[in-house]
Amino acid sequence: MIMRVMGEGQFEVGDDHVNLLNELDAELVTAVDSGDEELFRLAYGKLLDAVKQYGTPVPLDSLEPSDLILPSAEATIDEVRELLMADGEGVIPGYPE
Image (cartoon, rainbow, N blue to C red; front, side):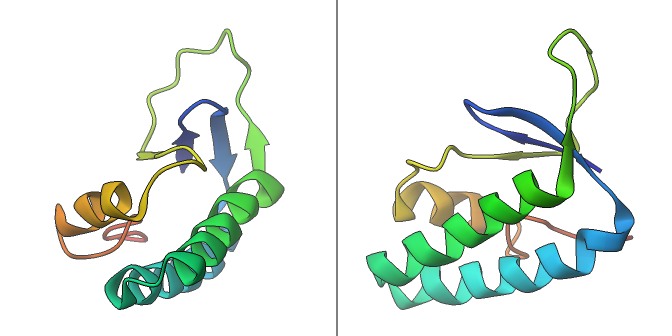
């Protein structure tokens, strides 16, 4: 799965890490639902850190389509809430299929 983090590039994350990302995504949904900005920052930071830690950077000259686009680390809770509300499944919807 190729994930783009806005402002940071693309990362290819193997299927062996998708369960962890889904767990972190669930934490993010809980944090956004709570409206707690500090909890949101922690949860979103953990998700982005995991993408970068477990993902392999895609070369900048590669034209790979992204399976998922995540807002930058500076995204607001409202911006991420809007992304979550797009389908109600979190930022990593329906994966794995």
